[in-house]
Figure 1: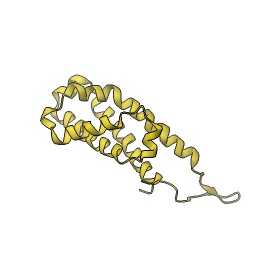
Figure 2: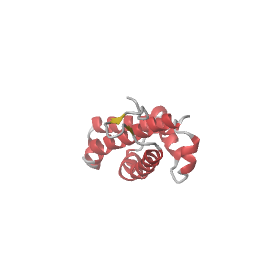
Figure 3: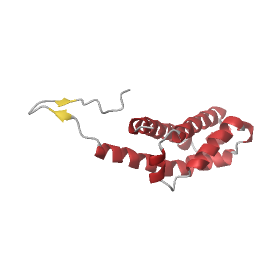
Figure 4: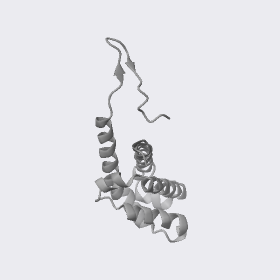
Length: 137
């Protein structure tokens, strides 16, 4: 797994957390429990987020041993394969508490990469030149 691949998945995880917080977190637990569309969107986003964490490099995961990587993968498997047995109280706890820890990890890694990556090249007294080191969407 390359650093570029890690970067792609880190950005996806960060954006997915933002969407979960915007959709479910901002509306509160009662709305999450009462509205099937909010629940379904949240579960789907948690599933894709967990899938992205599984694709992160072992080197990255080793830098963040406090993150329960195996539990995140186990949650994904539960949502995908035993979806009728998903405990919504646990899902809400993930939304309300666990995502913030994962977000901090992702932000630290993104900051680490930003510091390690050289800035855009600049012509002498001219405009910046794109060096092609961005994500490339």
